[in-house]
Amino acid sequence: MTTEVLLQILGGVADVAGVTGAIISALVLLRLKLAEQKMQEDVQVLLRLEGEEGRVIALPLALKRRDLGRAELLGRLGMLPMRQKGARFALRALSNPAFMQGINEVTDGKTSVLVIPCTEDEIDQFDL
Image (cartoon, rainbow, N blue to C red; front, side, top):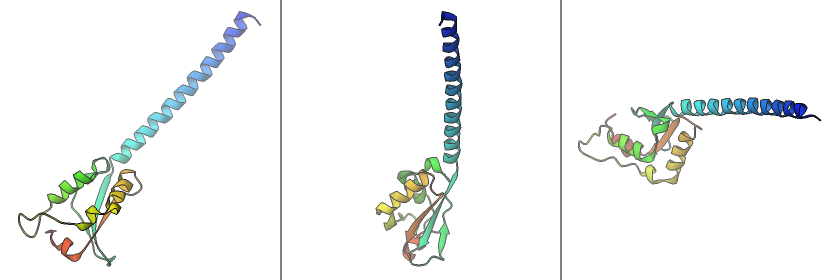
């Protein structure tokens, strides 16, 4: 084999490697773009009366998936109007591990709805 033939083979391999790299880069960029779009989606937070599948209250919280975290959600809940002025809300479900699992499912993109189970008294504390 001559040097010229070896250089042609090497050039062909380099071309294939370059095209492969470009395709992989394009796929990675597409995947990142789709992930970013998913993080921009709106998330809905619902209060559901325990034991009654019919009574559900959608909270007026404008949340994006990227913003949903325990602290952010608690802050937004604290901004909701209360029936008793100056009172602090109390939801026992927020200290349950299932609550964090629900937040993780939303942030992972498995669902766009976070359901918080509540008692009648817990729902009635909000002036919604």
